[in-house]
Image (cartoon, rainbow, N blue to C red):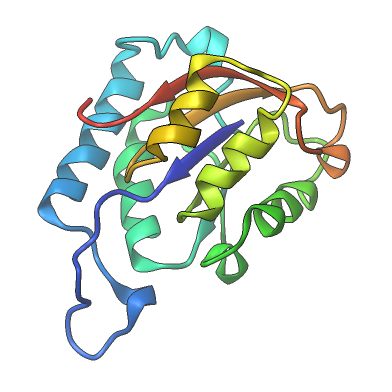
Length: 176
């Protein structure tokens, strides 16, 4: 399972849009493209055989999450289907957990693309039984823009996903 926070966004939306319509800043565009390239090349810890590339992506409908995903997903061989969900925008960790629980049990690995604080809290909550440096890093330093946590979950079905059921395979933060 992959938890991706959107890349760095502009402070203000262009035109009349609100927060939901904020676009990526130049740094965000560069970070997301670099993450996509890192995934594509298998560099620095992205050993694809171990990471179970997503078979499904659940993505917030916010402009910045869609733009982030577009740049990152190019790194995947065979783009997985994407479900855009307004409910992921501004979702709490519990809300994100419920989004994941709603996935079909036929899906092996999922990427969820969202926002903080929900994304960071989701990672920490899923790693509640793990006391490793990745979890401590998220707890103490946060989950910056364009960060991705790759986790292995022990739940047999997405509907039974619960807190503390994951181990961290990798935590990747910019610069990539």
